[in-house]
Length: 81
Image (tube, rainbow, N blue to C red; front, side, top):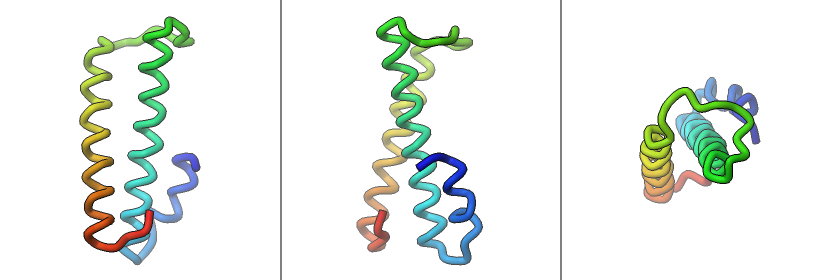
């Protein structure tokens, strides 16, 4: 799934569908940022970072916590991800 695939879900009248879109979006973004961090560490990143890698790592950690919070909420509210 790509971010563009979530557009229709975001506009849903059903909050569970919108919740899934939110979860998918943070999951996709977290995976992409993780890939950037891994490539930077290996020296294979195909572009130059414009901010410090530490800042990106901090962002990644916060995104992971947010994703985990959504997963916990999905369990509580019986939302199938």
